[in-house]
Image 1: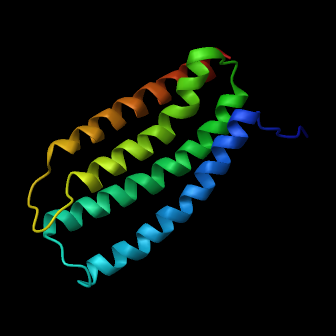
Image 2 (image 1 turned 90 degrees about the vertical axis):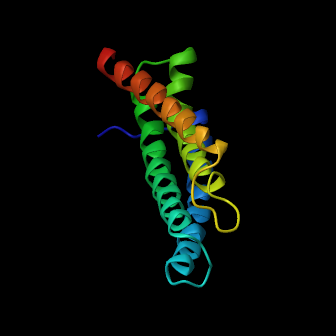
Length: 138
């Protein structure tokens, strides 16, 4: 049986991602207040809060898995960096896009910061593409 040893970049990013899950947990508590009607928001804002929270949680967990897979591949240089940071960056950008584009009082449609969702999707695609190709080629 082999022992898994994370590279320093993977260990550092994984540690940051694990700590960021505390923020996601707090966000879940806050979201529960929103859906119980304790925080006044429009239906649109409630839906975007749910989407932002869900994307943050799922992508942070996927980002943790990616750290292990990058170390298991033969990737190095820019492709390794893209594979290592693409998904965690997507977690930040996509969730921020949902939260920030719906911020304000009585908001009914997203503002220009929704572009962060698209940038996050691009980051996710680059990270997953780099990692997938790297794993297939190793």
